[in-house]
Length: 116
Image (cartoon, rainbow, N blue to C red; front, side, top):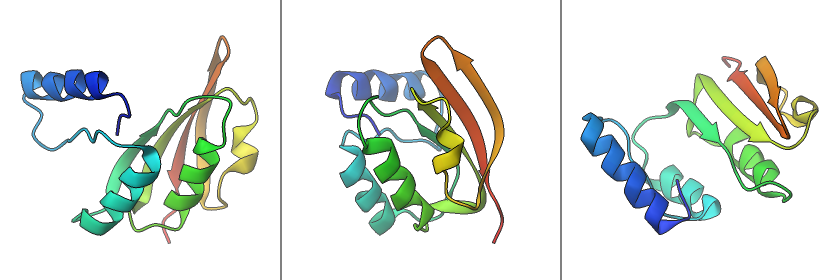
């Protein structure tokens, strides 16, 4: 999902150039993308990247939606980028931190959804 049309086009072209057939770039807002995927996704995702704009509530909103959504497989991996050093304290209880690193102002996390 990419909100910027030019970036979405570049990402789609890159997938085509690399011969990737099992991925798709959606040009949509995060909120509408989650709703669209919930309605049309044939199977849950094993890997999700969350890198929203910083200094807003969007990441918390998307995490809350995904936590109660059929979009994630039982043992999905979720990569999160944020400006917050302690985001793991805000994760859903069944999202278990696997790795955490910081580069400059950005903290990034790899979390695993615990199998139900």
